[in-house]
Picture 1 (spheres, rainbow, N blue to C red):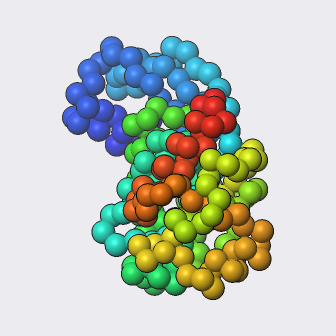
Picture 2 (picture 1 turned 180 degrees about the vertical axis):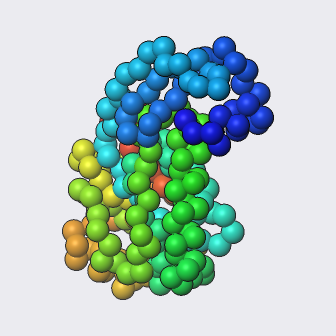
Length: 212
């Protein structure tokens, strides 16, 4: 816990010397420590990553909708994020914006990890500008027009969820993703905002497979 974090705990969280707090290194290690100018670790333990491993490819969106998706999906146990500039993304990142945007997503994921007392900090990869992005395990594209509901799929231990922008994923993008082996699934009759689609899918998946 660096000096900036200690000052935040003192001034913003009003934590006083002698109080016990939970800390993490973001790599699976949790600890209970006594707060002060220096932290005194009372006990620590290792936590396995939640299963399944969920990689979210999140399309850029206007406002803070993509950032909201990162925040909530982190709280629900997402393990990796890839910002995706889809064909219909209104927001466009040049090189400078991509650097700042990835840093911003990392900061949001860090804060959400701390807020939800999780042991593992999600990774945020570089911006993807096409459908050739690297993915992990089972590739699932969320599409409100899909015939197969997400609840009817069998889930692997590693999977990647693809979430489109406000205007949806284009037909050409869907065909390219299908050619990579993607399964196309819906979240039911409702059309979710891009900020809520990934969190809804993660909650659904983890409810079906268990919240271990």
